[in-house]
Image (cartoon, rainbow, N blue to C red; front, top):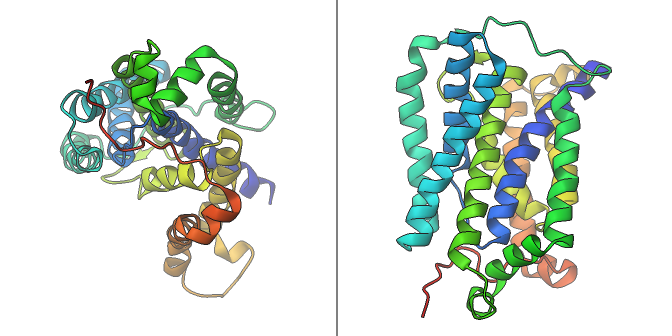
Amino acid sequence: MLTFLIRSLEAAMIFTFAGLGELVDQRAGILNVGLEGIMLFGATLGFIAAKTTGNYLLGFLVGIGIGALLGLLHGFFSITLGVDQVVSGMGIWIFGFGMTTYIGNPYTGPLGLDQIPAIFGVSPFVYLAVIMVVLVWFVLSKTGLGLKIRSVGERPGVAAVSGVSVTRIRYMSVIFGGMMSGFAGAVYALYYNPVWNYNFLMGWGFISLALVFFSMWNSYLLFGGAVLFGLLWQLALNPQMFFPGLASRYIWRMVPFMMTILVLTLISSKWFRSRWGATKPEALGLPYHKE
């Protein structure tokens, strides 16, 4: 049971890292549905770097770096060129799926390095995830930078008149989001499941994206949702622990994704929004053109 809970937390931290990056993106008005592709790149290139050099730190830095570059690419398309943000994000996902399959194929198999040691029986990344949750909340809620991020996500025209550079703030946010997604992918490949195979994330990026909407753009709620989906994911992998003989394991594998669909359907309903007041940024997904 303890092992199940620890593995659930380790899964939750990956959702948390990617989700926090996307939360900052969306608070600045940028929607990036390409999280899965960025995570695949971070996982694959981070895995290759760590496996060929034997250096974990280099693997994580490569994951963060490629995430930053892909965030910058998404920013160029969606901020500078004003391309539809969903189209740009889907392009990154498709590109990531195909390219990482080609690049990573020669490295199929286990990482082959000693596992990163736990701290008091818990992954060090769990502690880092908690710190990042508090840090993102503090920056967005208590600092001038956070006010600027929220303002360009709500009323970019008003923010620009007030002297805020909408373009700079949005680029900063989308690059940060890419870095967090790339790091999340690297953590998955180097710690949580250090065995490379094509498309081995299996939808974790889309679950992380859904968590941002689930959280109503609040970092604490996002962390709670990440823990919930971490538990669901581990339950899908080990259903016999609690429900021996009940349904096929392949059906249980569908549970996290079914829950994602149900959550998104619920929070998109008029009843939910009128009752709970989900604070969706007004300019989310909308390009800003300076007049």
